[in-house]
Image (cartoon, rainbow, N blue to C red):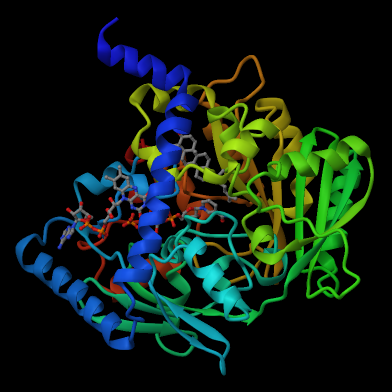
Length: 501
Ligand SMILES: Cc1cc2nc3c(=O)[nH]c(=O)nc-3n(C[C@H](O)[C@H](O)[C@H](O)COP(=O)(O)OP(=O)(O)OC[C@H]3O[C@@H](n4cnc5c(N)ncnc54)[C@H](O)[C@@H]3O)c2cc1C
Ligand SMILES: NC(=O)C1=CN([C@@H]2O[C@H](COP(=O)(O)OP(=O)(O)OC[C@H]3O[C@@H](n4cnc5c(N)ncnc54)[C@H](OP(=O)(O)O)[C@@H]3O)[C@@H](O)[C@H]2O)C=CC1
Ligand SMILES: CC(C)=CCC[C@@H](C)[C@H]1CC[C@@]2(C)C3=C(CC[C@]12C)[C@@]1(C)CC[C@H](O)C(C)(C)[C@@H]1CC3
């Protein structure tokens, strides 16, 4: 066998060998390096001045492009392999790349309870700093590598979104560099139209350089209740009633394990007291994958309650990349593996992406389904039945989120706040007639139910359908106002499947 094809064969069939013996050690070395760099070399704390200098450099880059390459529309220079997407963002190759890699926390304003951060800071960097200072954010995302900029410019939601909405709803101010190289501030009172249009605009109105996020006091634990439920009717009605109970619940999440079986989780942030028992530090390296732990309550058919340290709770799906890591390291949840090598998990998504071959990509394309659909909560039963018929993938992640009737791209279709659910389907379809063409049918199904879809995978919808799903009226007006037409692409030109391969 030719040496290239041998390597390909090993990478496809024994990806775990490569991941366990090469990528995991690389990830550890990366972590050691990052700690070393932060602690020894970059002792300086960021001051407002440092941030201003970096912003000026970006403004210069934009103005430089305006003189020397006005024909090429702009996007960020963040390489595709670093981003939390499955496919390559091929549009980056023909656009003018501006380096906006600003990744520090700027300041905490305890009086107004906000934190100002640069956009490339990740959840994994931000949350530990905040928790150490006694704070947290209302919507803390579950994967460490997600960036604040990506969550504002895309969308983000979590198990607290039934109370606080999508991630951007907790942001109070953005700093944006426009196509002309000017720096503008956007908030509810300053440039309110731009403020409303930025979420989901995927960097097509300007470059974010700072974001203010609301803070709330952190507590030590999440008291989490697990409740196994059977039958889709019961699952839907129980979920609806828990999302209405915003007094008692801080977190609501559902994992569906088969067409008629699910575990509903509700949680409260608490400091506990001296009598607090049942503390489960699920973030410890030897602990089972979270979705397997939750499944154990379904198997035993018992309600249960545990106290989980706050940070462990936030990143509960990080170690197992929801359930995607089981396809890469099939024995990753075996106790022997966990005790021996669990401490170097998880593999860095960026490294996994950087080293995936074309064959792996093709195999994922043809035999794997990954997507998130956002639908009105009343459509849960109908949607799960549809997804069961066409995909039959379990577990299914269900996360409720309240949407407001704004003029932004993503909004509630009713004239009042309405409860939606994110339905996440990740895995290998178990139906005999599966083909990747089904993805478009499912998007149309969601469009018909007045739902949305996340764009980290891209979309098969055409421009007309896409505009029906996301309200473009205000967005178009703001694009005119900010002179975006020949300087930034339209959102659709960044998220359609032709440019995400
Ligand atoms: C195998 C490997 C794995 C790695 N894994 C990780 C990882 O998991 N996590 C991690 O954080 N880092 C990782 N790194 C390090 C990472 O590659 C670099 O640290 C990172 O890319 C540096 O980014 P930067 O923003 O400093 O920009 P640069 O690397 O300087 O630039 C990024 C891009 O921007 C373009 N660019 C720069 N300036 C301009 C300009 N003025 N105008 C237009 N375009 C411009 C460049 O052409 C380049 O394409 C890894 C590196 C390697 C080799
Ligand atoms: N729980 C959740 O809610 C999860 C959400 N996601 C999705 O992942 C994505 C976030 O991943 P992440 O890797 O952080 O981000 P990405 O690198 O994927 O960026 C997402 C978009 O935001 C734009 N963007 C990012 N930073 C800036 C900036 N400073 N200025 C202007 N535009 C910017 C990018 O523009 P450009 O194309 O120019 O680079 C890109 O279009 C989101 O789309 C989110 O929906 C994924 C997993 C979980
Ligand atoms: C709204 C929510 C909660 C979304 C969760 C999305 C995750 C399940 C996605 C985000 C990034 C993601 C697409 C990824 C992958 C699986 C699904 C992930 C983790 C994997 C690891 C699958 C294997 C691939 O070869 C590769 C390594 C490129 C990707 C990387 C990104």
